[in-house]
Length: 361
Ligand code: ADP
Ligand code: MG
Image (cartoon, rainbow, N blue to C red; front, side, top):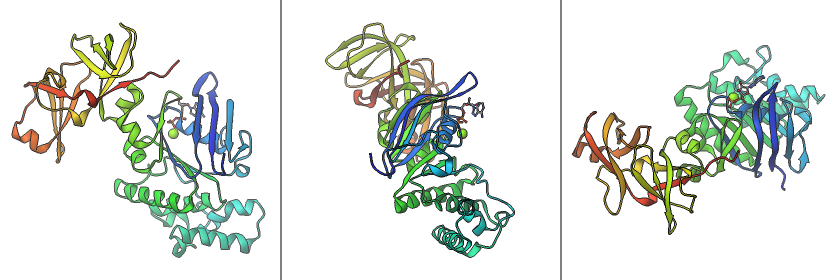
C-alpha cells in the first residue's frame, strides 16, 4: 500500500434497522480520481461520510495510507471533505474561511493567513480574499470551499455532489477544473455523483452503487462497454436489457428465450438450462434491418421517435417487457424515416451483446 491508497473493508452503515451501506469492499489506489455513482438513496453519501469520519461506522474499516482510520477524528485522518452546499461561514471573509481549520489547530495568525492566501491563489480566488461568501458567485464559492478543504494537505479529498448546485454551463467548466486540479495535486479524489456523464468525464475509477452495494468498480470504458449487471446496464443508459431463461449453451455461445417467445444469443460461459439470464445490447449498435443468419434481432412496433440532432432515438416494442432502444445516425434515419405504430425490424451482431452477471446475495 502506498501513501494515498484508500481502502474500504466490509464497510457497513445502519441507521436503526435500515441498512444503508452493505459491507462494501473497495480499493482506490493513490492518485485516482474515483466517482461513486448511483441513484439517490443508494448509500453514496453515507459511504463518503464514513470515509471522512463525519459518520460513525457500523461495521468494517477505513484504511488510508496503511493506517486504520475507521474511528479517527475528521481532522486527524488525512482526509478532507467538501460538502454539497459548501458550508462556508457567512460572517468570515475568504481568508478566514480558508484558514479556519488551521486556527482550530492553533496555528499562528501570520502563518495561517499566508497559507490561506496560497490556497486562494491556487484556486484563482486571491483577488477576492477580503470578500465574504455572499459576495461571490456559485462557482467562486465552490473554489473557496475547495481551498478550505485542501489547506489541510489531505491525502484524499472527498467531494459530495460538488457540482450539483451549479448551472449546466458552469458545471461543465468546473468539472474540467476539478480534474485538472486533481492531476496537478496528484492526490486521491473520491467524488459522489448521480450523473453518469459526470462520472464518465472525470473518473479513472467508476464505482456504481445500488441499494448499499457495489455493482461494478472499473474504468469508465469498461463500465460503459461491459456493464457487469443488468442494473449497471440500465443505469448507464447505453444498453438494452433482455431477460429470459437459458435454453442451450454450446461453443461459448449461450441461447436464451424471453417470456414473449423470441430467442437470442450471447457469447459467454455455459449456464444451467432454465436458469434466469440477462443480456445487454448496445443501443448505438442496433441497426434498422431484419435479423439474418449473421445477426440477431426481432420484428416489433415503433413506440417513440426522438430527434437528437446527430442521432435519432427510436424505441420499439416486441422483445421483452421493456421498450427496446436503437440510437441511429440522423442520415440513416432520414434515408428511411419511421413513425410511431410502424412495423420495424431491428438487428445487431453477436459481439454487440454482453452477458450480464448478478450481484451475489
Ligand atoms: P445517497 O447519497 O446515495 O443518496 P445516502 O447515503 O444519503 O444515499 O442514503 C442511503 C440511505 O440511508 C437512504 O435510504 C437514506 O434515506 C438513509 N439515510 C441517510 N442518512 C440517514 C440518517 N442520518 N438517518 C437515517 N437514515 C439515513
Ligand atoms: Mg447523497
